Image 1 (tube, rainbow, N blue to C red):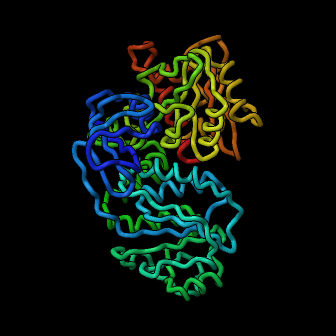
Image 2: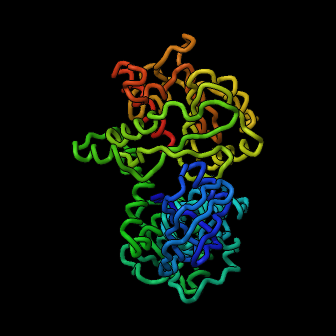
Amino acid sequence: MNTELYLDPDLPQAGSFELKPEESRHLVRVRREREGVAVLVTNGRGLLARCILQKAIPTGAVLEIQTLHEEPAPMPLELAVSPLHNEGRWEWLIEKATELGATRILPLVCERTEHHRWKPDRLQRIIESAMKQSLRCYQPLLAVPQTLQQWKPNSSLALWMAHCHLHLTRIPIQQVDKDLPVCLVLGPEGDLSENEVNHLASLGAQGLDLGPHRLRTETATLAALAHWAQRGSRLLLVLWCILMGMGGGLTGHAQAQSPNMAAQNSTSGTISLGRLRYGGGGDWYANPSSLPNLARFCNRHMGTSLKVQEEVAEVGSPDLFRFPWLHMTGHGRVLFTDSEARNLRQYLTGGGFLHVDDNYGMDPYVRSEFKKVFPELDWVRVASDHPMYREPFRMNGGLPKIHEHDGQPAQGLALVWENKIVVFYTYQCDLGDGWEDASVHKDPEPLRTQALQMGANILRYAFEH
C-alpha cells in the first residue's frame, strides 16, 4: 500500500474518479505506483478514502473508492502571527505550523513587523504539501493579512498572547489548559509593543510566558503550538522533536548507540532524502544504493531518523518542497527549462538544500544550467576549514578524493545565497560512488567510510543552517 496521502478537494463519496494532474504525476511518475495499489486520498475537509489505482495515467490517474471515513474535526487551534521578512523562515513556519495541527493561520501585521511579501498561492501549496506529509485530513485556512488594530478575534476561543514584558502579567505555558479551543498571538522579532499588549488584553487576551529565554518568532510559534498539539496525539510532539532536532543527532556530535538502537535507526525513519530528476538525457538515477547507504550511516552514527528508501523529485515539480535535502548526480547532459530553473530557485532560496555530485561528465552542464537558476552567483571554493569539513567528522584537508577521474584534486564548490550555502557541488571527487555498496566499486573500507562521513557532514550542515 502507498502510505502517502493525496489531496483532491473534489473527492466524491463513492465510485471511480480522476485524481488531479499534479497529484497523479507524483503518484505515477515519482512514486512509480502500478495499477492495483491502494492509495489514500483526502479532500482536506475531513473525508479520507481508501482507493485502488485502476489506471496509472500521469495526467489523470483513475482511482476507485473502496472505503470512506470521515475524520472528526480537530479542536480549533488558530494562529495569529507576525509575518517574517525572511521568506524562507516564514514559509518554514507556515509548513511546521500545519504539521503541528494549526487550523487557521492569520498573518498579523504589528507595529514592528518588517516588510514582507504576500504570496498566498505559494503559501497555499506549502500548506497542502505539509498537510499531506503529516497525514492530516483537515487543511488549515490561510487568512488574508490584517493589522493588529483591525483584527477582531473569535470570541469563542481562549485568546493567548506571547510576549516578553516582564512587568506585565504572564502565565507559564505549562499551567495553561490545553484542552480548550484556542487562538495564539505571536508578535514580530522586536516583540509586541506595550500598547499592543494592552489592546489585546482589552479584547480578552491573557499573557503567555514561554520560558526564560528569548525566542525568534518561528521558534516561539512552534514552542507554543507544541503545547496544544499534544492534546490531539502524542505523536505530534514526537514529530516536532524530530523536525527540530533530527532525533537528537544533527544538533550534537556523532553519538554512540546501543547495537539494538543502531540497528533500528539504520533501517527506519521519518524524513526522506530526495533524488533530483532532471532532463537532458543524463542518468539522474545513477548510484542507486548510495542514498540508502548514507541514510543508514547517519541513522547509525548520528542518531538521525532518515528513511532508508530514497524518493524522487522532478526539478519542476512542487514535490521539491517536501524535501529538506536533495541529491543530484549523473554522468552526462543536464538541462533545466526556464520554469524548472525558477522552481529550483524558489526551493533553494526558501530553505532547501541541494548536493550536486559529478559522477563524471556533468561539469559543463552543471555550470551552464545553474546560471539559469542563479545568474547573479558564481561558484566559490569552500575553504578546507569550513564547518562542513569539520562537523561532526573532521576531514583533514577538505573534500576527500574518492575516484581519480581526470587526476585533478577534489573540489568542493558552492553557490551562496544570503550567507548560506544552498548548493554544494562535489567535483573531481565522485563522493556518491563512495556511498555505494562495497561490491560495486570495491573501494577500500576506510575510503568508503570517509565518503560516508563527508556525506553526513553535508547533511548536518544543510539541516543546521
